[in-house]
Length: 137
Image (tube, rainbow, N blue to C red; front, side, top):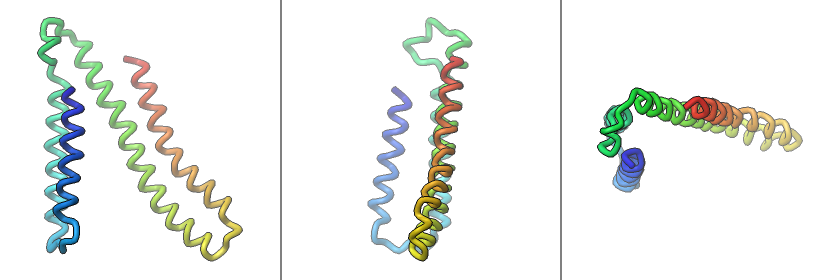
């Protein structure tokens, strides 16, 4: 439940910040980026604390397995999340280059689709790793 609250709160905060900055000229983008990174760090530390601390409903059954499973879930989510982030960056770079190539030489469309598929494979590897982690819990 606490993970759901963190995800919802982070999404709502990102939406509010986006609506606030929409159509405005940002004088110092580094300040905005630094604030966003600091906020993400605070949310990460808070989420890690909620993951490691036992919930009140399971306080009576405190066992080392609960902390291990919490870290396992955290590892699985980080594996998937970071792999998808890397795949998104790869697809952005490869997709931009593919559009340039297809614009000049349309016969290269099939080749560029293969390169895009290879870039998307990074996300699939992250999902496979997270499934392997979850299988050990």
